[in-house]
Length: 70
Image (cartoon, rainbow, N blue to C red; front, side, top):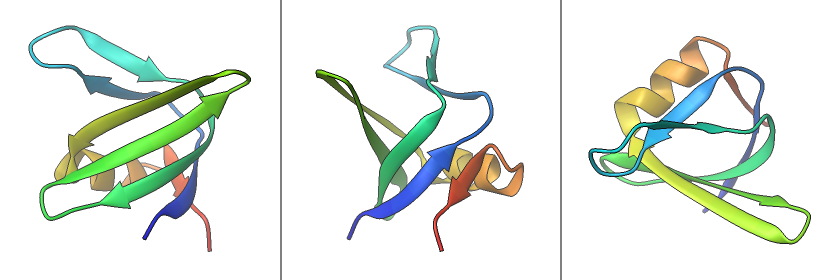
């Protein structure tokens, strides 16, 4: 089940061995699995998504960079 969240700080993910890519501030939907979290968002006509290790996601939440909706 997707959970609503809000990006409020610098949150980045990495595609393969490439550079870190920032996720823009704003609302996202979060789907968590055993080992990772997938964040999805919409900007006007474009959609984005990013997968990150669950440990990184939890760190961003603990640091206050991602706020989970109540």
